[in-house]
Length: 353
Image (cartoon, rainbow, N blue to C red; front, side, top):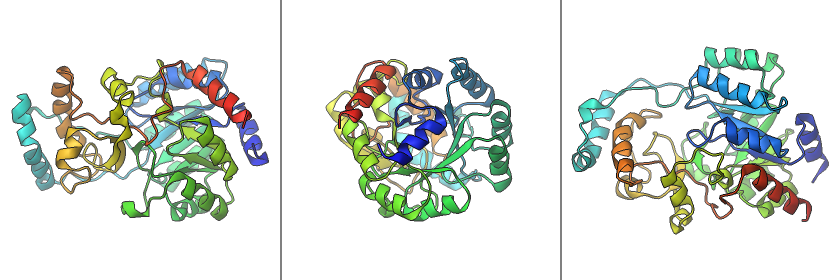
């Protein structure tokens, strides 16, 4: 490990250069606790949790001998509902509603994904996590200042060199360089052009050369060899997500687990069908038939609501046709072992390289 990596780990009290990726919908505090107990940095995703639920999860991590924690938030700008787009989206889904006996009149409107706001800032001020990370750029300056005054490190995701430079100019403490291989939502925010997106091992050295900040490598890193490669390219740590999805502490659904453990996991793609923003998941029926990228879904996160009843009806009969089966391009490293054992195995292999 390089000296910058060692300094980064020392500041956070880590013994392993691994950050567990925050994975909304696939984890809660149990995974963050297990990862933290093994010497890596556990993370909590705030995008799908209300403030009270997120408070409980942070407190659960805190109860374990004051383990450091990364609390992650989406910071997208909410968009007004476009009724014409919504109706077009439902019309495209109509054959599936008919097939599964779903009445679209019963679709419940909702926020889909919650952006960072006053409530989130108040929670950070109350609980003072060691790290607060953001996806899709940064929140408004006044909100960011409130986070900064708590003493938390502020991280955010960059998918291009331009995004990394933008984040550096706004005073973040570290950049998460998210390669094209990463599972879940792309953190892209200065552009919606997916042709600008680079692979992890191409992106990391360019970001390291461009900014004077610690760079955390993310995307397709699920084995010790990938972590070691990222460190050699100048990263201070690797953010690992997909590798933890089969661990018992993850809340990954049985259907999602089966897909990750099957040959289907070899075929992933970026899709905007499930939320309205590009995100990488295992290719399923909806992606094959309507996408994977399409102009049909409403803007993020508006695509979610119309799919909720379809997903529920299909999952009830054992089908993942309409479920977001998030996965990076390298699910090979995912194993059904305790998360602490996963971290320890990765750490041992990193040290031997």
